[in-house]
Amino acid sequence: NAGVTQTPKFQVLKTGQSMTLQCAQDMNHEYMSWYRQDPGMGLRLIHYSVGAGITDQGEVPNGYNVSRSTTEDFPLRLLSAAPSQTSVYFCASSRTGRKNTEAFFGQGTRLTVV
Amino acid sequence: DQQVKQNSPSLSVQEGRISILNCDYTNSMFDYFLWYKKYPAEGPTFLISISSIKDKNEDGRFTVFLNKSAKHLSLHIVPSQPGDSAVYFCAARGTGKLIFGQGTTLQVKP
Image (tube, rainbow over all chains, first blue to last red; front, top):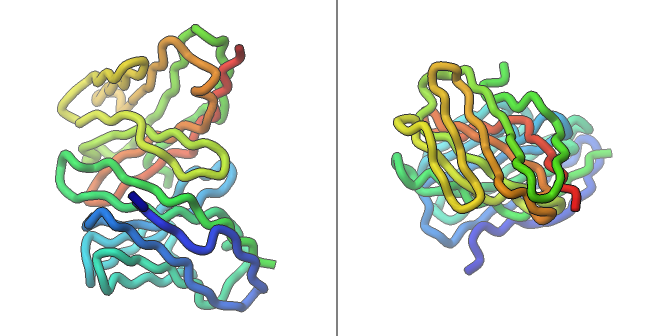
């Protein structure tokens, strides 16, 4: 079982460059989300989606775009990378509904912007 | 404004003793609370959860307590084992979003 797959695992960008972090899940989960982890800040929600075609902003959405054209994929786009976006990014998926709230996480993408 | 707070960045306990990790929240609309465990270079993994209509949930060595009036939850690990050494995140669900705290690094000494 693949679960949640993130690519790439590591990436170095120059300031101003753009890139897309990929996230795919094979559990047919409706809910997908992106978090960034920074020292002392925990996991902060960037964007989330409750289903294909529906996205919404989280706690720290600025500088990031998302789209959800299929149930399986939820890419995160950085249009013009900044050093403040240096972080570890995690994608997660879960079923919606009151009981099935457990979120499954990918292995993370470590991004450095120089 | 941090809606979910873990005020202790780190905790060190002796093997076999109890570990107590704490979490406070501000939003009374949260309806589900979860604890996640994270090892270095891995994604967080689900540990245990509790609905807002309960005050306790137990799973083996792990017990989560919820005090709604105080907006406080805690995770008890008894007995603690060296393999429990990791970062623990509490999380709360509200309006479809899962909000995490800052994390507490637990070190269990042999």
